[in-house]
Amino acid sequence: MNRRNRIQLALGMLLILLGIGFFADRQFPEIHEVFARFTVWPANLVGIGALVLVIGLFMGVPGMAVPATIIAGIGGIFLYQKRIDDYASWSYLWTLIPGLVGIGSGLAGLLGENRFFNLKRGLRLIVISGVLFLVFATWFGGLEIFGYIFPAILITLIGVWLIIRTFRVKKKTEPEDNNPV
Image (cartoon, rainbow, N blue to C red; front, side):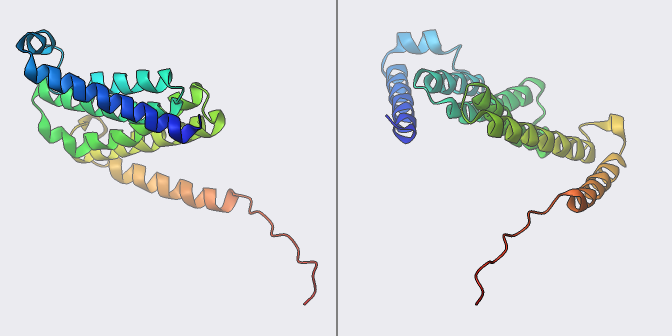
């Protein structure tokens, strides 16, 4: 079975399990009472993310780690906001989502799917997410330990780094044209 068919099979199984679970939850009060403490919003998103990961591993599709970490991570963010009653923190917590993609990509690489590429991409996304989080959290008051000037300094340093990197990158030479016109 090729990769695309395995992914479709895994997603199909996940949707069937969720559908059966939702049906059973609504039709049988006993089942609803048992699972009510496990299906509290937003903790259920963390569980769904774990289920997506397990199904992906079972089906031999390590790439399912990416949506699994996104779902579980967003559930974790919402759970944090609910516990401390700080919904305004979304103004900077959304910057963690690229890092969640990076964690999922790195996990997929560790599980054997295009190892070097996924680990490199995952690390890059985690760093980008970390920088965005520092800038936005400082800007919107979530991290006051750095002061209000920190985002300006960080953005300036990133700009300098990008300019230096542009001149340091070796350009690929184009092949010579041996066919005279």
